[in-house]
Amino acid sequence: MSGLVSRRVVLPLLLFAAVLAVWEAAVPLLRIQQIVLPTPSGIALTMVHTAGPIAFHARHTLVTTLLGFGFAVGLGLLLGFAIGASATVHDAIYPLLVGFNSIPKAAMVPLLVMWFGIGAVPAVLTAFLLAFFPVAVNVAVGLATLESELRDVLRALGASRWQIFRKVGVPRTMPLFFASLKVAISSAFVGSVISETVASNAGIGYLMAVAGSDFNTRLAFGGLFVLAAMGVLLYGVFAIIERRMTAWAYTE
Amino acid sequence: MPADAAIQLRDVAFEYLTNGRVTRAVEDVSLEVTRGATVAFVGPSGCGKSTLLKLVAGLLTTSRGTIIVDGRPVKGPLENVGMAFQNPVLLPWRTVLDNLLLPFEILRENGDPRAPDRAVWKDKASALLKTVGLAGAEHRQPRELSGGMRQRVSLCRALIHEPRLLLLDEPFAALDAFTREEMWELHQTLRRHREFTGVLVTHDLREAVFLAQTIYVMSADPGRIAHVHEVKLPTPRTLAQLYGAEATALIRLMREQIRPSREAVA
Image 1: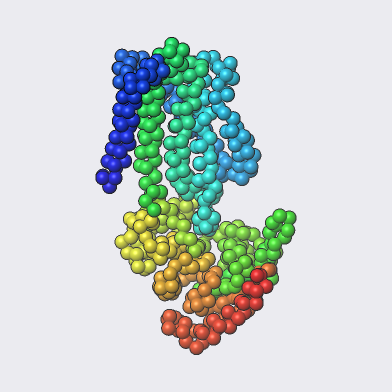
Image 2: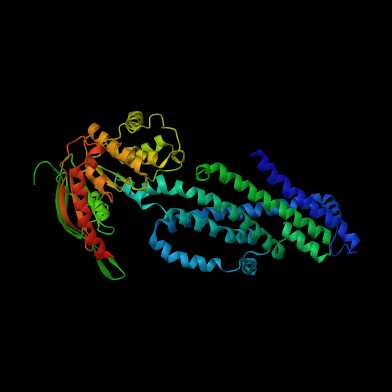
């Protein structure tokens, strides 16, 4: 078991280090200009020099992502419960929801900027718009797929719909809910960075946009690495929470 | 109506609409089940056996006719019923004991006097688990149990609130042959410990002969009672009886009775 875990940690890290080494060697070897493709060491140096601003912008991105994610989880749960519990609500809302979800959310940023101006609000809202759909769908599916036999057993005890929902529907939906959080946090992250890139004055997305217009390739790459690290971290946190909360669903 | 009839069906019919067409699932069913007896419904797939079970439990409403349980017409889901199905549907996030406490939680929330307090209920759960050969399994997770063990827990859940009716819909169909026979004997043991009226729906003719006093052979499309058999084997029954001349003849007869109905459906 521990051998497997270390394999799964060590192997990708080794590969990542190898890619960086090849990259480091290839840039001078192929005489690539640093402004086109900087070396990893150069990027690292820039990241150390601008550690303060990077930390500030990373914190900003994290806060907008988590805010948007929080709202998305709240609304996603409510919507999912409503869709899963009532066939009427499902038939009325679900097609609209699918339609709405097929809109590329980046296209909504200009509208959000018109309403709320440049800043954190459009970023939070974009994060929210991208993240609530997976939560709502997973929760709805979890509720709607309740075994009819289980429903009969409980109804034969005199259980009300509300009791069946509470005692069985909700706990049974939790593995799907927690699985959706991993997807939702990644979506929220994408949403807030998109919005920051085009319409903000803070956040890693903004930092990268500025670096781009300054032809500061090193800083732009630095931002990319920070985003990658944050994305993996956020996903990892929710993957661990998922395992902890719904262990019963994984050991079958 | 005789005083000892626990269940009475009078001209019961059940129809439903699919794609604008009326499907007649059950028609002209009239019968009586004596208190404490077990009856079995056998027949081809789609003959309305399971529908009949749900009608008795009040989970479905009759289109015509009346069903009377314990002297009262069935108007909605009955509350003195235990049910078990082919799929044991235990809650995987709860231990065995907590699965058996689920009926208690629901009855207590609804102010039912059968749910006095948790400690009493826990003792009942432990005693019941002992009866089905699962002593000490209280804190195990359903996923750790074999199919037969899960089905035992499912039976315990169906019986823990001491229902007057036990409704079983192919409860042992998913088990291997040996475990199934064990479960038949277990069912017999349970009936000696507590009094309940049983309704069994099954495809397994030997199971019906072992467990029931009366067997109704149904025909399909629409589901009607085609034949009625009294099983005269003495009780307690043994597996050896199933290989005797009397049981063999009855099983062979029922097979012949079900076959034409099967061909009509095909």
